[in-house]
Amino acid sequence: MSRAQSFGAAARDYHRFRPGYPAELADVVLAHATGPVTRALEIGAGTGKATRLFAERGIQVTAIEPDAGMRTVLEAGTRGLPVTVQPTTFEEVDLARLGPVDLCFAAAAFHWTDPATRWHRVAEALRPGGVVAIFGAQTVLADAALAAAVAAIEAEIEAEIEAEIEAGIDGTIADLAAPYLEPVDVPELEAVELTVLPRRAEQPADDYVRHLATVSAYLVLEPDARASVLARVRALLPESVELVQDIDVQLARRR
Ligand SMILES: C[S@@+](CC[C@H](N)C(=O)[O-])C[C@H]1O[C@@H](n2cnc3c(N)ncnc32)[C@H](O)[C@@H]1O
Image 1 (tube, rainbow, N blue to C red):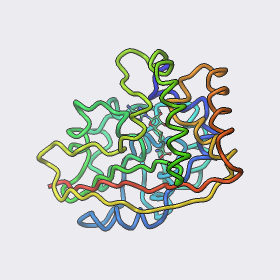
Image 2: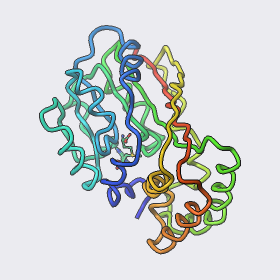
Image 3: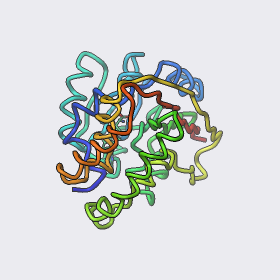
């Protein structure tokens, strides 16, 4: 199993234990476009956490999601909203058929797409003045000592994770610390802007650990290995943990 395809197995937990996105994020994204935003293309919609944010504002969203497990939750959660789900990847979607959109967005998903083509395809998908929004949030323990202790456990299992990762799909636990953002590298996009929306949360430690179990680096582990490492993490934690869940946002506009 590749990491990019690892999420579906835990789609329900993914939906339950990963945080959604606030209305403020949609405000920031929509303000960056020139002209009205009525049609959007979403890359890697997953269970629909960001899909709903825009669809609930009446924007028609074509939501691309290659994973069947994720799509089941996505389709159930967006019923009645102006969302069309396409069971494909960003590399394969027929952009000419879709026609130019006002907004192209990827929530915690752009880093899974092909670096050689993704920015060209974003530029191709957008109308002039349309906006691209690449964003994502990591969940980090606010207590630095606890965070370091969990990182030490993760470092120990790094080799095991590497062994599980399909050849050609890059990624290590260290990548989890890398932003979801990928630098814009095509001349058709301008007005590049990076923003951080700060966010904090308090969560029962059990829920935090169940959230960790939805992170791809853990998902690729064998079930026994995953259970044992998560038990070690849980043993370190108090009943309730404070989390930093800042949202990194990168915006750009089509010339
Ligand atoms: C970490 S999840 C993010 C899901 C959702 N956007 C969210 O914020 O909760 C990444 C998603 O990208 C999807 N994905 C992986 N490779 C993709 C590709 N090449 N094109 C489109 N989506 C892809 C995965 O199936 C997964 O649902």
